Amino acid sequence: MKHLAAYLLLGLAGNTSPSASDIKGVLESVGIDAEDDRLEKLLSELKDKDISTLIQEGSSKLASVPSGGAGGGAGAGGAAPAAGGAAAAEEEKPAEKEEEKEESDEDMGFGLFD
Image (spheres, one colour):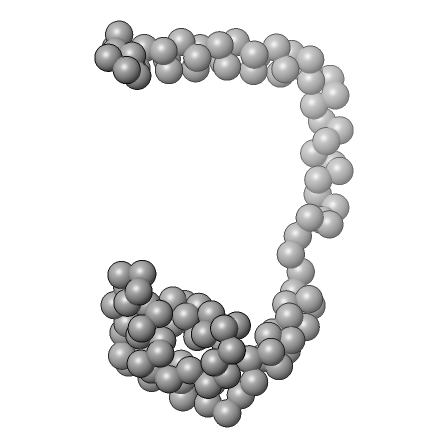
């Protein structure tokens, strides 16, 4: 993934055909060592391909993948707490107060600027 990210950054900068040394330079500038075998595999797979075309093709493929959020199970679960919803809300409030007490105990009497 880091090799692909460097490749794409170079592409955005105007280098339409980054070399292995270009990608290694980007990665080394942020303290990451490039893995030669993965880098060579990436370059061989992307050889003679346009980055923007690949991104468009990938976006159209991702558009057809279901990503959740439209499922029918959520509606059924929402009706169940109607009878005990108020009791559940009351139970949550004391739990929050207990957490605040625990957090104040963690500093053990030391302040930020002591």
